[in-house]
Image 1 (tube, helix red, strand yellow):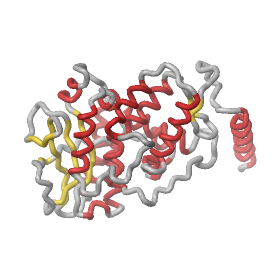
Image 2 (spheres, one colour):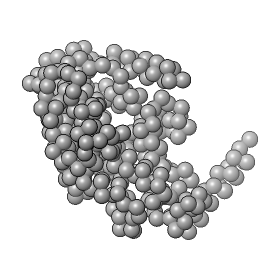
Image 3 (cartoon, helix red, strand yellow):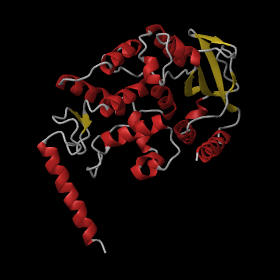
Image 4 (tube, helix red, strand yellow):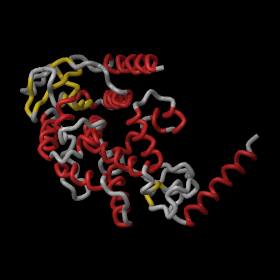
Length: 314
C-alpha cells in the first residue's frame, strides 16, 4: 500500500516537474539560525523553490530532491498552468524542517509544524519569514495583514490557544474570524478550486498525507458543510496567486492544525449546516452537529428535499 502511494505521487510529480518551462528547475537552500549554508547533515530547514537559471539569488542553491507531497505537486501544476512560473522569479514550493530545528524547540522532539511553531521561539519565526521573502521577489506575505496579530508573535498566540482546556464564546468567534480571513483574504480556500480537491468523495481517494487530508477536510466542512447544497463562503480568489499558496501554508497551515486539534478534543464543533464554529452544550453528543435550532431546521429541510429529488429521478 505504502509502495503504491509513493509510486503514484512520484510519477505524478515527475510529470509536473517535466512540464516546467525551459531553463526552470527545482532547487533548494539550506539554513541554520536563519543563515544560508552549504548542505550538511545538521540544518534547521530547507526552502525548496522553482528557479530560473538566469535569476541569481546570491545564496547557495542546490538541486532539490523530488519527494514532494501530492498537494505540493498539485499546487505546482496549478502555478505552471496559470503561467506564474514564467514571471522569471523564484517561488516557494515547500519548506522542510530538519531534526536540528525540532531538537531546539524547548530541547525536545516535536512531531509536526504546529508544535515547532508554538515553541515560543520568535527569532526562529522571524528568520523563517525573512528567508521566505528572500527567495521570492513576490513576497508571499507582502499582502497579508492577519487578524491584528504579527506573524512573528503568531507562535505565542497559537500556544495560548493550544493550552486552553475550554474556550468562551468570544474566543470561538475570534477563531471563526481568523479562519474566514485564511479562506478569503489570505486565499487558502483557493485549494478547493482545484478539481481534484473540490469533491469530498474524490479527495478521499487521493494520495494525500494525513496533514494535507485534515486541511482539505476542514476547508470542505467550512466552505461547503455536509448538509448544505451550495458553498457557504463565497471567496474572491481572483487576486490570489497560485505561486503564493505553498509558502502561506507553511506559516498559516498550523492554524488549520490548531483548529483540528481543538475539534478532536471536542472543545468546539463545526456546524454541519453553516460551517461556523460553535460551543456544544453536550460535547460528547455525536448528534449535536448544529450551532442553533435554525440551522438544524434548515438542514432537515435540505435533507428532505434531496430525498424527494432522488425518489422523483427515474
